Image (tube, rainbow, N blue to C red; front, side):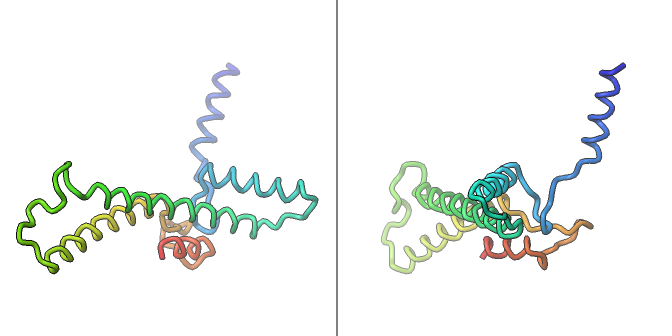
Length: 148
């Protein structure tokens, strides 16, 4: 009977639980752990923590990590763009400067697209409580800074 009650409680809690959001930005485990660590560090130094500035620091760290990963995706896509082990100039017999520039532009666009998709995956735009876009909040400003 106790076990059934515990299972019912767990089911009810999980059904009612929603992802934690701050300023419309979902808070993941890494961000929450970073926030707690920064907060504890401030308290351990004998200072009074400021929640807003601590959270801003966490957002900036998350943004930097997302940017670093997106840049790695871009660099990997550019490095892999030489084709399946063949010569990078294969199929470009009699190449011209315009042809090379066109090929470079196409490779750049493909790599940039892959990097921006990864950035969007890591930093989804903030959502308002009603599910709409909430870019006017402080979280939206952080996302706009990352996306820029």
